[in-house]
Image (cartoon, rainbow, N blue to C red; front, side, top):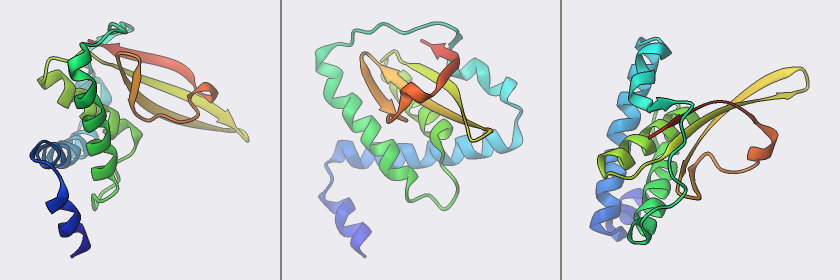
Length: 144
């Protein structure tokens, strides 16, 4: 019941983004489960390209809202919505709105284990997957 109360307090933009993020997280989960990664690559953008670091100032609010909606929604999905799924979904949402972004995939070696991480940048802002990015070595990027 508490989740419904929180949902009612959201603006229409936020509600729409939450629904869009939820549907795309499900689609992304299914696609990554059933399809090899090489089939998903064409949807991610140009390999080893960067998007511009400038974004229209009027889009700054939308960037924050997209990041918030994807991160928040991923916590409530009944399936695993990891950093890669979040970055892919945020990229798709931004692309639909004509906002260029770059999806990064990096690895880190800790205690003899390799850990992977994905994050999305639009303009100068990290939309999803922020945090201790300095510990990850970028392996590949997909720009707009």
